[in-house]
Amino acid sequence: MKTALRLGFAAAATIALAACGNDNTVSEDVTAESVEVTADEALEDVTEQPVADQAVAPAAAPREEDDTEAAVEATVQEDAENAAAAAEDVRAALREMEGTAETANDAAQAATDSGN
Image (cartoon, rainbow, N blue to C red):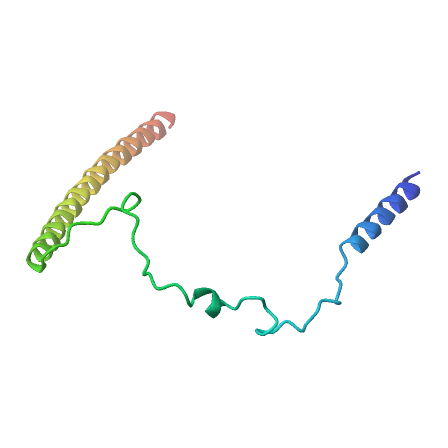
């Protein structure tokens, strides 16, 4: 019974692979002259330049160079303040972890001492 089932699956797989076979009879005589419209011909009447869709991406107000420099300086200052605050948060977390580790060590030592 198992042999018949295996032969049936093998036959089905063979038929499926044969149906998906490769056909090498594709015409290779496609050239620029045989195509109905080349890309250059399709675009030769286009003279307009693309424009931005204001509904999708509204244009930002143009900045002057002085405003840009001031904005960069403000951004750098804000980033520095954020970095300092993050560093202080890390220091506080480390202090808390050290306190927790000391408490755990004390509890382990007390358990060891009471067991002896």
